[in-house]
Image 1 (tube, rainbow, N blue to C red):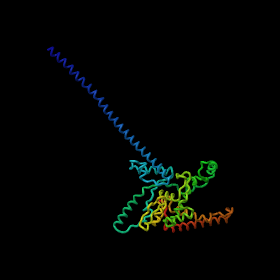
Image 2: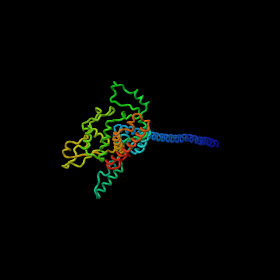
Image 3: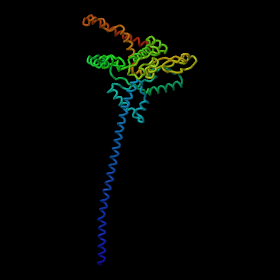
Image 4: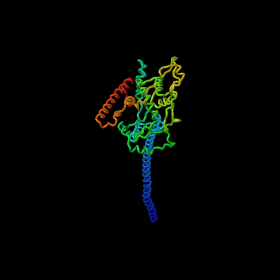
Amino acid sequence: MARGSTTRSQKAPKASQAQASQPRRSQKQRPAEESEDEQDDDQEDDDNMEVDQELDDGQNDEKRMVHELVRLAMFNEHRRMPLRREEISKKVLGSNTRAFARVFAAAQDILQNILGMRLVELRTRAELDPDKEKLNDGEEARNAAGVKRKAAAAGSKTYILRSTLSDELIEAMAVTHEEILEDEAEDAPSEDDEEEQYSAKNYGTMLAWSKGDQLAPLGILYVILALILVSGRVVGDQELRVMLKRLNLSGTTNIPFTAASTHPGNALTLDNYLTQLMRQGYIDRAQVGAGADGKKATNKGKRGRVAAADEEAGITYEWRWGPRAASEVGEKAVAKFVAEFMVAQHGQPGDDDDGEENSGAARVRAQKKQTDAEAQMDKMLTGVARAAGGELADIK
């Protein structure tokens, strides 16, 4: 009995030890479960941080593309070259082509709010001259017209920078201020300054046209646009060259550029300048049919001149406005340029008052001159519109 009791007493502690060890195992399991939960939380936090980092990287990447688009637009505008959609995709967007709308809108905000400019899409040739090529009747003609309309509806996908400053603000910025004139006189280079490549006058204005643009080439461009406009919006190549020759502008005449230009020697011949204007989109040259032998042009557009072979074949060309001129300058502005030049030949109001500006007779004469000048302007604008062959178009 004693031995059996002893045996039972020995087994009892083992059972109690087993029961005592059970809670210890559960205590060891709890930290393991808690550590797994903490790992899950840490993993979730890491995932959230990665998502936030990706969002931040995406926003920074898009911001970078916006700034690159602004710089690219400014660079192309300095060269007066249109900015194409393919160029934006290649140099700015890369593989993020779907971000074009957001990047373009953000770049527009920077250009307009900070620089006073905006990107404007050029009109297509079909929009500029819808009646240039009339199609015949028939199913084939209707299909071709449908394709052309779809292409025109898609737009040119070519952009230029255009100022958003109002005419009133530009006129106010062009007014002479004595303070600005004095500051410009102090900062003017000395006569023996060899670094000054060209002479630019000081006008004491916020907008100094003599320093901010290529005045000589710009003036010739406006003359060419005016000649095309008053010739019925299209002029033959030989006819245009005859008119330019009357202004001492032959094909080999050098057009001077300022030191800010990138042309070698700061000059281009008239032929090369016409070619440059075609690339920039200001003017457009098209072949008029084929020669007497049915041949087409051998070097259309090469250096802006008609090759001797084309002349022998009887091939002719005609000049029209390009899409950039229609979107940047406009027919109404060129017509006003012509009218103001013609009216200015009759003198300005008050030129012959001889110091009697305070007298009643002088004021009456000045008022009459002003009225006559306005009437002459209206008459001249009407004449330009009649010579152009219809109502003058404004920029869009």
